[in-house]
Length: 345
Image (tube, rainbow, N blue to C red; front, top):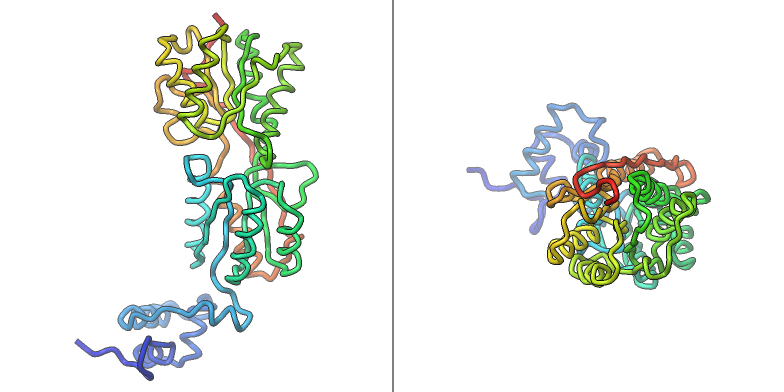
């Protein structure tokens, strides 16, 4: 087997790859930076040579010369459960189609921490950044503006958005699921939503649920409005406390994670679902179709949101477009009726 050819000691560079492939260093550079400009046969030879030599591009060196680093950042509130996992996976997969990688971090609904994370990502010369929602510290937005880093908001929709967005109308999603129960004849409905502080998506969902109740002239006493984090164990405890008192005929949960915990609480309380109690969620996350009973919910198309957002940021890099040229996209939600809801008893 031939020994790897290297011009200098240490890691192989484009000169080494060029020598192995029998092409010029400029052709190797074009192959990696503008592959559409290189013939398929030549690209195959260069890639084979790079693989044989163990060549790895120095993207940071390219970034220092005002070329792309090849890395896009994503900052999400949490990666602790299924809320954003599908979004992250689809975003990453779309970037990989364009030979881009991602750096992902979470701030646990702490906007001060989010600002710190954004600063750290900017220090790494990222090509763009995706944030969740429209609620961010002014200092964070200013850092992005000053450095002209393409930024896009995910997941949530706001009529007067600060950032261009790809997301769903969370108010409408909660309105749909609550109205579904109202149409089934439910009047005594309890609500379990996360803390709305620093979470514009949760606030929109809470407002959407209350809007549906208000339009149906159904009161929502404080005893029927509960707060719970996105955690199955915590939501189970919250639901158990609701079920030990005067039982409602239905529970609307701020997302599917909370709804799963409520279903477990109903099972532990020996309550027949949905004959004695309907439970619904928002999101249509993994396992929502397979839990028993299968969960009625509103589908937030996380995969599509991730794909569209990643492609938008790639386009900004490749076409030299500005953030203002990103067309915001509102993605439709869908009511998914399954076995966890039925007519009021």
